[in-house]
Length: 273
Image (cartoon, rainbow, N blue to C red; front, side, top):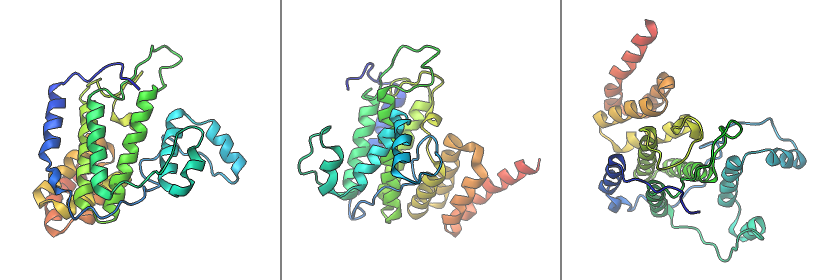
């Protein structure tokens, strides 16, 4: 897919690239010891349908889904099926020959870095002429971006679940930085026919924050932990601040909990007013 518009190299994009480079990719070391399968509950679709009880009902439900939801399901499927049956799944549509697993967390960070570079270069930007009938639709490029973003989020959650806290934290923070770039109003990453923003991606912040805060608790100082928890909640899910603060409190150590206390008291004071 050729981008319709290439990233403009805004100051925010420059800062984002510089921040990425400062992360220190040499830290992809002994932490990277295997990649977990994506969680089926993370990075979920935009809606949940009724319970499916047989294959015919499942086929009918799939036929009615949007292209974006089907892309996400396809991403999950190719991660879950055994490599020997992958050809049976996608044969006739994609040439598959000797597909091998990527090497653990190093590959995850490489994928996130490449995704970020491609996104800032306009790789996923694809617009269309908007009218009253299609103003709620996404372009193929936007659908592809959302599917890949959620796949990488799942990779971060999987890395956190298996104790690869440094790898998972870098994964999350690079993806969060990309969302912040979008939320600053830059239109060089993906195209929205209507009002745009990271909220349109439908991220499951409960699962994502549970994994990210665990990574911070294991790798950050008390002050940095509290500051990042506060800022990340504010940027992406401020309307559910009390619940997310409780999630952070549950995984924090004693010093980190002490640093969180002023934030939690502030929330409690606001709720009493």
